[in-house]
Every structure is written in C-alpha cells, then in structure tokens.
Amino acid sequence: MTINPKDNLPENYYNHFPLSDFFTFDIRPYTTVVRFDSEEAILREGDIPAFLYYLIEGRAKLFLSHENGRVSLINFLNAPCFIGEMELLGAQSAANGVTAITPCTCFAIRMNECKDQILNDVKFLRHLCLFLSRKAIGNTYNYSRNQAWPLEVRLANFILLTSCNEMYRERHTEVSEFLGVTYRHLLYVLADFVKRGILVKTEQGYHIQDSDALRKISEGH
Image (cartoon, rainbow, N blue to C red):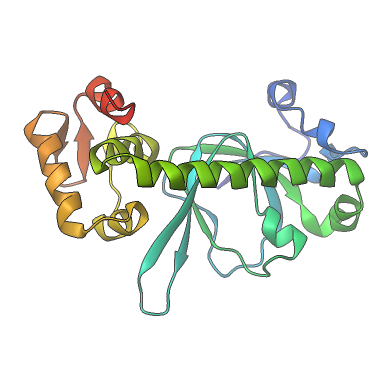
C-alpha cells in the first residue's frame, strides 16, 4: 500500500469524486489517498479495519476462507464504492478479505479519529443506505444472470471482470464454486476458449488473446 502525505491530497481526485458531498462535516482532515497494487490486500481477513475506504479507481474481489482451507469468492467491487462499511456499522467485527484485482486508488478515512461523527451524520447514513440498497439489487441481478445464461457467457464475463493487463489467474476451484458449475465443466469451456484462440494458456495463467471475441461472448452474442 502506498500512502500520500495527509497534506498532499490531489485536488483532481476530489474534483471527480467529491467525498465531502457525503458528509455534513469536513471529512478531508481525516482522509488520505492510498494506492494498492494488483493482488495486494486492501482488507486482510480477520482484521479489524482501521479505515473506511472509498474506492475511486480499480477493481477488487471480496472472499471468505473456511476452516477446511477452502476459499469462496463472495463478490466483486468496482469503483466507485465503499469498502469496510459493514465493519463500520458493526454488522461484523472482523473483515472479510478484500484483494485488489487491478491497481486500486482509494480515499482512506481514519476511523479512530471520526467514527462517532460519521455514525451520527444523517447525510452520510442516508447515502450509505442507498449504496447498500443498490449493492443488494446488483447482487440479485448477478445471481439471476448466473441462473439464466450458459456457462460460456458467464465465464467470459467473469474473465473480463477478474483479469488484469490481459491476464486471467483465478483458481479453478474458487471459480467453479462461484459460478455454480462443476470443475470439469469449467475446464471444458476454458479449453474451448483456448482452442478458438480467445485465450492462450501460460505458466502464469491465461493470456487474453482476443478480447473482442471474449466481450461478444459475455454479451450473449
């Protein structure tokens, strides 16, 4: 994680993402700009978050580890959105894991300095309710889409969502569980994408050779 000095918040970020519009008080003295590299942890699983993040650039994934060692993908986070809001509200005390898919830039609000003000700010709470409602609607839509479309379409969309710099590296076991298909069926469709020249298998994962074709498949064409 790279942190900008507290007195060096780039004005262009605030011009495009006016975080102050969410609050009745000046949030800027409690805020820094932080950057995470691809595959870097934004929230470490089990930790009590010190920051409420507002993702302004990039994509991240939310996951949960089980006692038997298995890992389940829960959701994907796209800018702009909050990260750590459930822990702020007390819905859960410790964080699920959040890892950057692409390089991510966030506003980081230092909770130890302003938590009481935030939790008593009606303007912010109204905005957060709207955010959580839209998030729930989006999750419902994604679940419905997973039931309605064939695996080829869902996997193409998943690859585009989770790839970085034209590379796809997700673990097959986690992906098959997230998409609700068998491991064997997942490998079959991946092999078909390779056969058609859409993907190229490498030691690091799968290189997206034909992003246009993959995007057309993801749109159901």
